Length: 422
Picture (cartoon, rainbow, N blue to C red):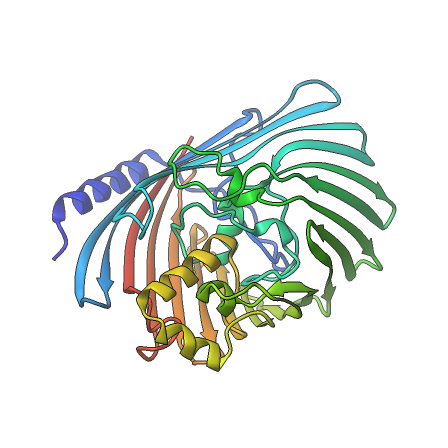
């Protein structure tokens, strides 16, 4: 049974937030936006945005079958200001205190997501130096062209893949950008700064994000008001070049089509889990999806995902034959990088702004492993006030005992959250 004290405390905070707030004045949702930020914008005149999130919940364990109380506090800070006409400073940090602590981690972990200075002499030319969360690709659940996502997540507080892209640590790099009419080019140089990830709570964790020398070249082109594309070339020390491409097309006023593709040499996931001799093979990776927005502003997305280095049926059997320790190694390899662990998967994602009430939003997804047919279901109901959010989250894993989601240690997670914005 759950303890009632933290629930009563958080319920009291909800009541205080609702009583002090006036009705929200939310902007109209962009029906064609592929990614939406759930948090309300801070006042334009303030360079600092801060959010304090408090949560309580219950976890249903799978093995042994048991229930466990959970609570969390997260402090999210973002600071962005112009130093003069040409230079700007951006800082972004997140501190999470999670109980129970994830396996193999400290309960309290700090993530310095961004810390960089930028120079822009004119609207077409820019230079950035520091840790930057540079995201690539239009897909929702898995982005094969998002090459700098490796090791970006120190701790995971939600299953929502869209939110996780915003929460992760960036990569230390020097980035040059040049825009022209209908397109642009960017070049990023990311040096090796450490050999391995750190488990220290206050570490910059440069070994997670900058464990090898890399260079990324991107070229963007807008062919029309409805079609845009991007080409990518990734160079890594000791590895053949990786090629990538993505495209987005507005098929109609309500339908968006998108695709990502990447081709490069990598070590298969089962070899990494098993500790076998690392043999690199050229593999293909892709995500293809459609987003349809109904007149009610309900946006529905279906996405097909393929990872040539992921586990096929034989790979999953080999993983489970190695026991729980192998599954834990699999999670360590995939979760911090938002990597697709299985060979093929489906994602069904839905979001509704203004569910009956203007301030009430619904978000949810179903992720399906197309190899073993196990499923992960997640949903969030969130109510906005000007400076406070209340949210209820539910997550459940379905599948046979020896399947990706059927083997997860958490069968079900329910959380009640309150977020204060400053």
